[in-house]
Amino acid sequence: MQDLYTNYLLTQNDKACATHLSGLLNNIISHDQVTRFLNKKLYTSKDLWQYLKKKILLDSKKNKGVLIFDDTISEKPYTKENEINCWHFDHAKGRFLKGINILTCYYHSNNLQLPIAYEIIKKDKYCTDGKTGKLKRKASITKNKHFKNYLDKEM
Image (cartoon, one colour):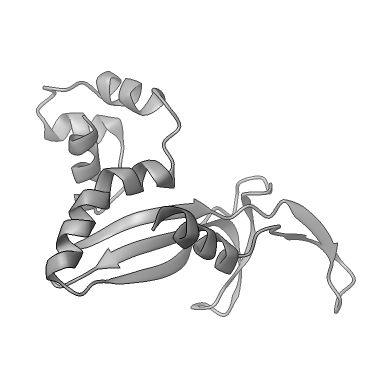
């Protein structure tokens, strides 16, 4: 089930859901089976790395690969603000957006392109903005620190 679901996520261009996966398989595997698999445990970035580590190490012996770190904001303008869904600056749009900020690490070589880690940014502290004097959220762990921690622990 893990191989099947991982392949589904890697090839999915739209929203991923258990019902859609089940439909692609002509209901050979029910959406309830997929949901039960996903609910067995809380999957983390470490699970993803353990799953893909062998493939990447084999590839890196033959090819020069690089790690690409990137972040994206999934806009959620109508969802109540909390430490995960809050205001983040989007450098591409040049403005603040309300949503979920997701950091991702990709492995890329001539033969292989895989996401190998992710982190959801939590703005779990409050501070006062020096310019406006308003209270704003701040992450206790910076994006750079998340990536440095990932490299120190996982590689």
